[in-house]
Image (cartoon, rainbow, N blue to C red; front, top):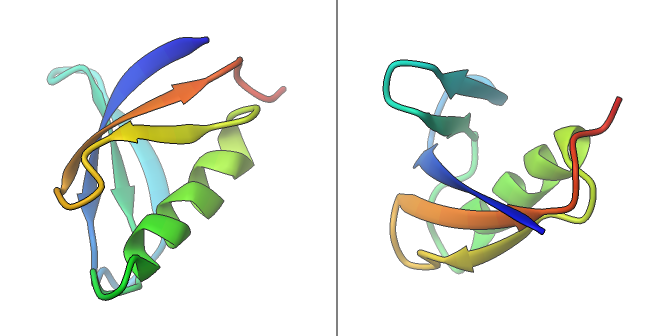
Length: 74
Protein backbone atom coordinates (compact mmCIF):
# COMPACT_ATOMS: atom_id res chain seq x y z
CA UNK A 1 0.00 0.00 0.00
CA UNK A 2 1.20 3.48 -0.85
CA UNK A 3 0.38 6.66 1.05
CA UNK A 4 -0.11 10.20 -0.15
CA UNK A 5 -1.21 13.54 1.28
CA UNK A 6 -4.46 15.25 0.35
CA UNK A 7 -5.95 18.72 0.82
CA UNK A 8 -9.76 18.90 0.69
CA UNK A 9 -11.61 21.98 -0.58
CA UNK A 10 -15.25 21.43 0.50
CA UNK A 11 -18.08 23.55 -0.89
CA UNK A 12 -16.47 23.91 -4.33
CA UNK A 13 -18.47 24.62 -7.46
CA UNK A 14 -17.05 21.53 -9.18
CA UNK A 15 -15.64 18.12 -8.26
CA UNK A 16 -12.08 17.41 -9.33
CA UNK A 17 -8.96 15.67 -8.11
CA UNK A 18 -5.65 17.28 -9.12
CA UNK A 19 -2.01 16.81 -8.13
CA UNK A 20 -0.02 19.90 -7.15
CA UNK A 21 3.50 19.19 -8.36
CA UNK A 22 5.09 22.13 -6.51
CA UNK A 23 3.62 21.22 -3.13
CA UNK A 24 3.70 17.45 -3.65
CA UNK A 25 0.15 16.56 -2.61
CA UNK A 26 -3.30 15.95 -4.08
CA UNK A 27 -6.11 18.52 -3.92
CA UNK A 28 -9.72 17.31 -3.90
CA UNK A 29 -12.43 19.81 -4.80
CA UNK A 30 -15.83 18.51 -3.61
CA UNK A 31 -19.29 20.08 -3.60
CA UNK A 32 -20.35 18.66 -0.25
CA UNK A 33 -20.05 20.73 2.91
CA UNK A 34 -18.03 19.28 5.82
CA UNK A 35 -21.13 18.25 7.77
CA UNK A 36 -21.58 14.75 9.28
CA UNK A 37 -18.82 13.25 7.14
CA UNK A 38 -20.46 14.09 3.80
CA UNK A 39 -17.31 15.74 2.44
CA UNK A 40 -15.23 12.69 3.43
CA UNK A 41 -17.62 10.41 1.52
CA UNK A 42 -17.37 12.67 -1.53
CA UNK A 43 -13.57 12.58 -1.27
CA UNK A 44 -13.58 8.77 -1.15
CA UNK A 45 -15.81 8.68 -4.23
CA UNK A 46 -13.32 10.93 -6.07
CA UNK A 47 -10.36 8.84 -4.91
CA UNK A 48 -12.05 5.62 -6.09
CA UNK A 49 -12.27 7.06 -9.61
CA UNK A 50 -8.45 7.34 -9.79
CA UNK A 51 -7.03 4.77 -7.30
CA UNK A 52 -7.58 1.10 -6.44
CA UNK A 53 -8.89 0.52 -2.89
CA UNK A 54 -8.32 3.98 -1.41
CA UNK A 55 -8.98 4.70 2.25
CA UNK A 56 -8.45 7.68 4.49
CA UNK A 57 -5.81 6.91 7.14
CA UNK A 58 -5.75 10.16 9.10
CA UNK A 59 -7.32 13.62 9.10
CA UNK A 60 -10.98 12.69 9.41
CA UNK A 61 -11.80 16.08 10.98
CA UNK A 62 -9.27 18.12 9.02
CA UNK A 63 -8.85 19.46 5.49
CA UNK A 64 -5.39 17.86 5.38
CA UNK A 65 -5.65 14.08 5.11
CA UNK A 66 -3.43 11.09 4.48
CA UNK A 67 -4.85 8.33 2.31
CA UNK A 68 -3.67 4.87 1.35
CA UNK A 69 -4.12 3.09 -2.00
CA UNK A 70 -2.90 0.01 -3.83
CA UNK A 71 -2.17 1.53 -7.25
CA UNK A 72 -3.39 3.97 -9.85
CA UNK A 73 -6.19 2.87 -12.14
CA UNK A 74 -5.26 2.71 -15.82
